[in-house]
Length: 196
Length: 228
Figure (cartoon, each protein chain N blue to C red):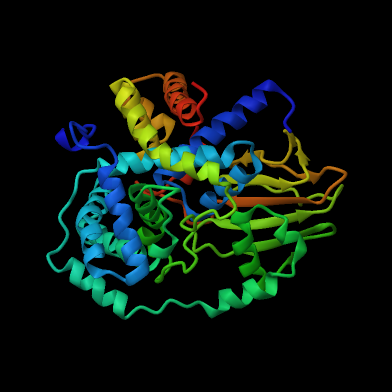
């Protein structure tokens, strides 16, 4: 269970690792810094693999996709923008985009125009501030929500289960699943958009 | 826009299900494109997708690590060194497409795929007032852009699998209702319909249809979305 519990921020400065990882990504982008990449790899590659294994991929496939995802991280490092997303969110986006495509091997190569990784240049500066804050707020809200709501959000937004599958898994009526997810995501949205 | 409150609620429910499936990575390339395009057409849509992705990213950070092979890092460096990263065909298509005005008025996520498709062979004639542009997303679902002139209609058709049609410009109407910008019409097996573009503006729509290859297993989602 310890694997899936919320991180204990304790006396560690919140977001300290996030700053560090963002620095590393910039070192990869600017200088093709292999040491920086090795550090990113050490933290994220096993998590990408863990994610794929839990989705039901075999060990060989999970290993292969995890390596491919990390190659994309190296290649697209220049597209990472710390004002817009944490390294976790950015790398998860790559893993997620790769998930079905790579699993089915419908394409031997990567999409050279990896969707969703490029920064949105036309965003006003104020928005970019908000986007950086968003990462902190998301973790804060996850810490405050009742455990059941966190589990429902995880099942829908991370595990990718349909509402019907969630209803079966949690033994809840479908309508209840829908309304609770709407409530929990609504709380998060309200906080992130400053409507609270 | 859809008229009744019931229809609006089902659009909201559909958007919520697609948003979480998108954030989690459960969607195929065709539906990903549809969701990204819809976000651009819906007030607050892009922001909401961003929230969902940040949430998924935070949950990913808590994922339990699984050890890679001891030589994994080395092997990744080796593959990076041997890497070729060029797709001249796509670049050429992008340049050629830069003058295509109508495409450039569509939401951003759809433009690259549309320009690449035009570079590859372009529009097919689908009947009077109707042209279609097949997209190559490396996807096992069929994704195409339909361009229907006002008052003209697509052929009546049935569905082998689920079909999601997102209105990007103009509007269309079928036997079940009126769909405006940002709305998604969902049709499945047994549903026969004949979309007709509403008067006033050319209707551009993105249609994502389940192909002959049905998805199965934990990685397939299109059917799941459809089933409820």
